[in-house]
Image 1: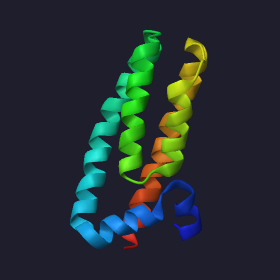
Image 2 (image 1 turned 60 degrees about the vertical axis):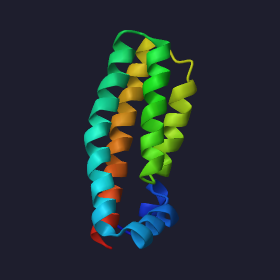
Image 3 (image 1 turned 90 degrees about the vertical axis):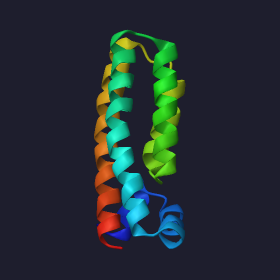
Image 4 (image 1 turned 30 degrees about the vertical axis):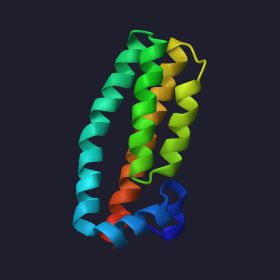
Length: 118
Protein backbone atom coordinates (compact mmCIF):
# COMPACT_ATOMS: atom_id res chain seq x y z
CA UNK A 1 0.00 0.00 0.00
CA UNK A 2 1.29 3.42 -0.83
CA UNK A 3 2.26 5.64 2.07
CA UNK A 4 -0.26 8.25 0.93
CA UNK A 5 -3.07 5.70 1.13
CA UNK A 6 -1.82 4.35 4.47
CA UNK A 7 -1.73 7.89 5.85
CA UNK A 8 -5.40 8.22 4.90
CA UNK A 9 -6.22 5.52 7.46
CA UNK A 10 -3.30 5.57 9.88
CA UNK A 11 -1.39 7.98 12.10
CA UNK A 12 1.98 7.07 10.62
CA UNK A 13 3.91 9.33 12.97
CA UNK A 14 2.44 7.58 16.03
CA UNK A 15 3.05 4.14 14.55
CA UNK A 16 6.63 4.96 13.58
CA UNK A 17 7.16 6.15 17.16
CA UNK A 18 5.85 2.82 18.46
CA UNK A 19 8.11 0.96 16.06
CA UNK A 20 11.17 2.99 17.06
CA UNK A 21 10.60 2.76 20.81
CA UNK A 22 8.92 -0.64 21.24
CA UNK A 23 10.08 -2.69 18.25
CA UNK A 24 8.17 -4.54 15.58
CA UNK A 25 7.30 -7.57 17.73
CA UNK A 26 5.44 -5.40 20.27
CA UNK A 27 3.64 -3.47 17.52
CA UNK A 28 2.58 -6.81 16.02
CA UNK A 29 1.29 -7.89 19.45
CA UNK A 30 -0.64 -4.62 19.79
CA UNK A 31 -2.28 -5.20 16.41
CA UNK A 32 -3.05 -8.81 17.28
CA UNK A 33 -4.72 -7.73 20.51
CA UNK A 34 -6.71 -5.06 18.65
CA UNK A 35 -7.79 -7.67 16.09
CA UNK A 36 -9.18 -9.88 18.88
CA UNK A 37 -10.78 -7.07 20.87
CA UNK A 38 -12.42 -5.36 17.90
CA UNK A 39 -14.59 -8.43 17.31
CA UNK A 40 -15.94 -7.99 20.84
CA UNK A 41 -16.46 -4.24 20.37
CA UNK A 42 -18.31 -4.71 17.09
CA UNK A 43 -20.48 -7.43 18.63
CA UNK A 44 -21.31 -5.17 21.59
CA UNK A 45 -22.11 -2.21 19.31
CA UNK A 46 -24.35 -4.46 17.22
CA UNK A 47 -26.14 -5.73 20.33
CA UNK A 48 -26.70 -2.11 21.44
CA UNK A 49 -28.14 -1.32 18.00
CA UNK A 50 -30.46 -4.35 18.03
CA UNK A 51 -31.61 -3.55 21.59
CA UNK A 52 -31.93 0.15 20.66
CA UNK A 53 -29.87 1.10 23.73
CA UNK A 54 -28.38 4.58 23.41
CA UNK A 55 -26.25 4.22 26.57
CA UNK A 56 -24.74 0.91 25.42
CA UNK A 57 -24.22 2.25 21.88
CA UNK A 58 -22.29 5.23 23.23
CA UNK A 59 -20.29 3.15 25.70
CA UNK A 60 -19.18 0.56 23.15
CA UNK A 61 -18.44 3.11 20.42
CA UNK A 62 -16.36 4.97 23.01
CA UNK A 63 -14.38 1.82 23.89
CA UNK A 64 -13.71 1.00 20.25
CA UNK A 65 -12.77 4.63 19.58
CA UNK A 66 -10.06 4.42 22.25
CA UNK A 67 -8.78 1.12 20.89
CA UNK A 68 -8.63 2.49 17.34
CA UNK A 69 -6.71 5.55 18.54
CA UNK A 70 -4.22 3.42 20.47
CA UNK A 71 -3.22 1.55 17.30
CA UNK A 72 -3.09 4.69 15.18
CA UNK A 73 -6.27 4.11 13.16
CA UNK A 74 -7.07 7.81 12.87
CA UNK A 75 -9.78 7.62 10.19
CA UNK A 76 -11.65 4.92 12.11
CA UNK A 77 -11.20 6.92 15.33
CA UNK A 78 -12.82 9.95 13.67
CA UNK A 79 -15.73 7.85 12.44
CA UNK A 80 -16.30 6.40 15.93
CA UNK A 81 -16.18 9.89 17.41
CA UNK A 82 -19.18 10.78 15.25
CA UNK A 83 -20.98 7.49 15.90
CA UNK A 84 -20.60 7.87 19.65
CA UNK A 85 -22.56 11.14 19.53
CA UNK A 86 -25.03 10.30 16.75
CA UNK A 87 -28.74 10.97 17.12
CA UNK A 88 -29.53 8.32 14.49
CA UNK A 89 -32.48 6.01 15.00
CA UNK A 90 -32.24 2.22 15.25
CA UNK A 91 -32.55 1.63 11.49
CA UNK A 92 -29.99 4.32 10.67
CA UNK A 93 -27.60 2.80 13.22
CA UNK A 94 -27.86 -0.53 11.41
CA UNK A 95 -26.48 1.20 8.29
CA UNK A 96 -23.83 3.02 10.33
CA UNK A 97 -22.76 -0.29 11.86
CA UNK A 98 -22.32 -1.85 8.42
CA UNK A 99 -20.20 1.15 7.39
CA UNK A 100 -18.19 0.84 10.61
CA UNK A 101 -17.41 -2.82 9.95
CA UNK A 102 -16.24 -1.95 6.44
CA UNK A 103 -14.11 0.95 7.70
CA UNK A 104 -12.56 -1.27 10.37
CA UNK A 105 -11.65 -3.84 7.73
CA UNK A 106 -10.02 -1.14 5.59
CA UNK A 107 -8.07 0.23 8.56
CA UNK A 108 -6.88 -3.26 9.52
CA UNK A 109 -5.70 -3.92 5.96
CA UNK A 110 -3.87 -0.59 5.93
CA UNK A 111 -2.20 -1.49 9.23
CA UNK A 112 -1.17 -4.94 8.00
CA UNK A 113 0.27 -3.47 4.80
CA UNK A 114 2.10 -0.77 6.74
CA UNK A 115 3.52 -3.33 9.18
CA UNK A 116 4.62 -5.65 6.35
CA UNK A 117 6.57 -2.78 4.77
CA UNK A 118 8.54 -2.05 7.98
